[in-house]
View 1 (cartoon, one colour):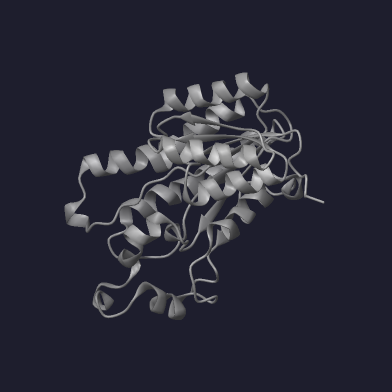
View 2 (tube, rainbow, N blue to C red; view 1 turned 30 degrees about the vertical axis):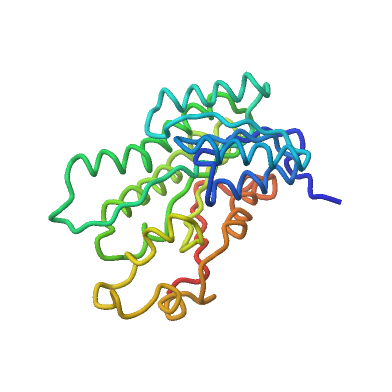
Length: 258
C-alpha cells in the first residue's frame, strides 16, 4: 500500500525538470500529489517527466517559467491554481552555480546569481503564499555552502545564506496564516550540476591531484554523494503534515560533512 501523505494536494516544483527537483516531483507524485513541474529551458525533460508520472498513475503538468523572472513565476503559480483549483505545496529547487575569485566577480555575475537563487525564491514564496491557506507548506533550497567555506564560492554561498535568512524571517509572517516555510541545504548530490561543478569544491592545492569521490571520503561521514531521491525524501518530509510543527528552519542534508 503506497504512502498517501499528499493525496488530494497540489504541489508546484520550480527547477523540476531534472536533478533534485525531478526527484522531488517523483516523490510527491508517488505519495498522491498532483504536481506542476516548472522549468526554464529543458522542455523535453519536463515533458518526459510528466509522461512518466502519468504512466505511474499520477497527475502532472509542465509549465515553462524562468525563476529569475517574477512575472513568469506568477504566471506559473496562476496556471497551477487554474489547472488544479488549489495550491498546497511549493518546493523551490531552481538554482544556478557560480565559482570565481573575488577579483573576477562582476555586477552582472551578482545580479545573475541572486536573480535566480535569492530573488527568484522570494517571489515564488510571495506568489504561492497568496494562494495558500492554513496547512500550506513551502520548502526552499539553500546549500551547505551557506555555512561552510570553499574557495571561489562567495557569490553562490551568499545567495544561499540569504535564503536561510528569508526562511527564518518569513516563518513569522506566514505563521499568521498557518503556513510553514523551511529549507533544505543539500550537500554534494549526484546530479548534472555535480558533474559540471563538483571539482570546484576541492581546495586549489588538491586540483588535479585527487578525485571528487576520493575527497568525499575524507570530508563526508557517509563518504559519497547523495542520490537525488535521498535528498527528495527531506523535501517530502518538510512538505508533509509530518513537519507541521517545524518552520523557519534549514535542514542540513549533507551526509555528515565535516
